[in-house]
Image (cartoon, rainbow, N blue to C red; front, top):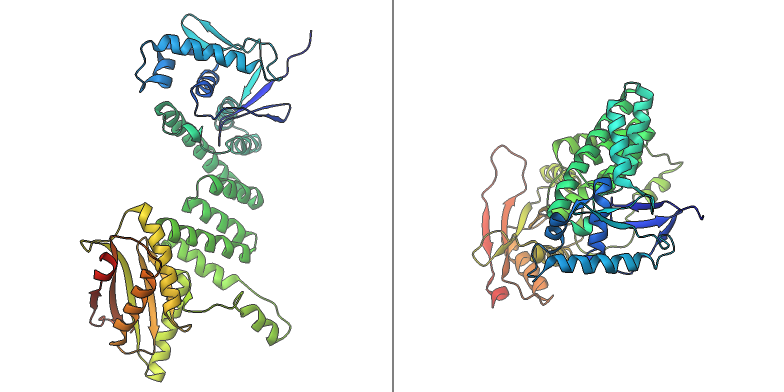
Length: 416
């Protein structure tokens, strides 16, 4: 009798099937009723899933005359389909017993990543020997490859199970981090933080990466992670760096060292990557440094400089919050600002719907000229938007009391 090969089922990061390390190509999307049925039966484990619950998951929102018959037909189709796959052979894998559907593991052995994860995590959290505990925690974290069944994230049962798996993953991850950190095993800790950040781009995991790299004295790489994190939070969420992130930035700035034989090498390293025109776009921390430098220079040369805040607003003058429209408009506004200002001006993304500009060597009345230039450039992109750009301008001076603020908006051309 030919020995049955064990089939591996992965549900973290997406549903997939493999046999002997070779992926099994499924000819149907994971969201189809037939594959959804397969997933439900497999995820139910050895206990199986009652017919009533299975019908609720698959057809709860469908108006069917007899969902029991529909389930029976889909189960028959699934059995026939699985037999077309070499890894399953002629095995009749899906059985019904006492009103429950279950996967017959004697007919076809399977290994589910979810079950291995639960078993490994459970052992890890109970283990008393520290070395063995660390090994098990790391293994559990590596098994968790991403969200549970993301293709079916809208299903209630998937969301509930997914939250339980996520919590257990975070428990293992944080316990592993504490133990590895206490032992100075920063390479392994960096790997865990990097993997966690690829699944959940949370600030705490970015901070974990930065701390590990700084402990390993890889300051340039730490700065790269910082820039990646701040760019993500600015562009995706419109958030400025937190105090903790800024603390890491200043700590890294003090540690980053460059070696160069001659001044020309240093100069080459300071050059922009490519020739750029228009205003200089920088991260918010970079913008704050530019602002401080300019304010110091103004004390000596007597020039004027102004801060201009550009906010995307709706027809009622309220900040635009529609995410679908906002990101498209903000990308065009970024282009409009960059191409409307001089190379000596600076700007940064300040919020989800805002840009902050530093204008140097201008008079206050020039603000309206800048505004019109940005509006014209923005309109040239042909956006049919019920939105406008609101401008607020204030003198760029570092003093206890801020200067008088101007606020104006010319939106008629955009709306009409």
